[in-house]
Length: 345
Ligand SMILES: Cc1cc2nc3c(=O)[nH]c(=O)nc-3n(C[C@H](O)[C@H](O)[C@H](O)COP(=O)(O)OP(=O)(O)OC[C@H]3O[C@@H](n4cnc5c(N)ncnc54)[C@H](O)[C@@H]3O)c2cc1C
Image (tube, rainbow, N blue to C red; front, top):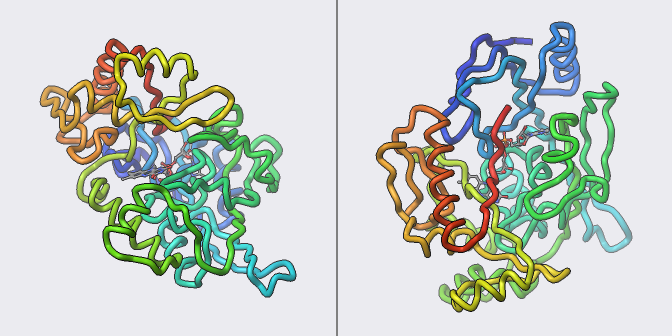
């Protein structure tokens, strides 16, 4: 097991910011994972597991512990049930590149995760914030999560129902933050074509391009085209995707806002609550394509929810920029935006 000392965390966040980790290692199987956690326990060091850092912001103070990068690779399909092999369980190692997994399942004619194409990061991180895009969320197809429980030292299976999955969150991000190191996820996919209605942006893209053949591949291609037009590639432009989750507010609160802002879009989510787009709020206060030269951070021209690093040297600059945006939105709408990427440690 190779353990790096005093590793720069900038290389482990797509925002390219952060201090240093006292120790950092990469694990490619469960045995190495156990070895790494034992090594840390013997030295009484805290541990953080990450995938590829596309939803992570490291503090400038760094981490006085062991960062474990999950590189566990595995992929297996298992047809189940008596429906002519139409239902397929897919077991995926947590360290697999998520988009490669989507590409693979799509090429096998499997439906269920095609709209989650091009989301950066690893498979193991997908349940952590219940990743979602273009009408699909990982909870729609997730069956269970296999994880190393750092409390018991055992490998455990956690069924989807016990993962506490809801909009951009889970028990792994909240009550059990840092406890489980996910080693594998199991998905239930369907052999066959996806069915309409698709997410409005996808539906429009298909109509505009005269696409009437709805296969996992045509939906994946549409989602990739939409995303590439809208979002910066983190390899070229440092960013960590949407910086805020879409606020979910009470219907009464929405009605109050709608009086002053009749065009405010909304999606009812049940229980008298409504989701509103954070990007709309930021654009409305004039902060789309806003470049804060003092902080070296900007909002992306095609999607103001994405913050890009334009020369910032410290995470604190990013956080100051975040606070400025939150403040302006709060003053104007009385809505407190909630940060989506995790600030670690
Ligand atoms: C350009 C861009 C677009 C994006 N678009 C979307 C989108 O459409 N929808 C969406 O939901 N997200 C999106 N994201 C966010 C991000 O891609 C996802 O959250 C992704 O799942 C993070 O994967 P990762 O491996 O990089 O996680 P990391 O950033 O490495 O980790 C994120 C969190 O999960 C924990 N974690 C990671 N792996 C494990 C594991 N194996 N076991 C236990 N804990 C773990 C970490 O401790 C950390 O708290 C986007 C990001 C970017 C840069």
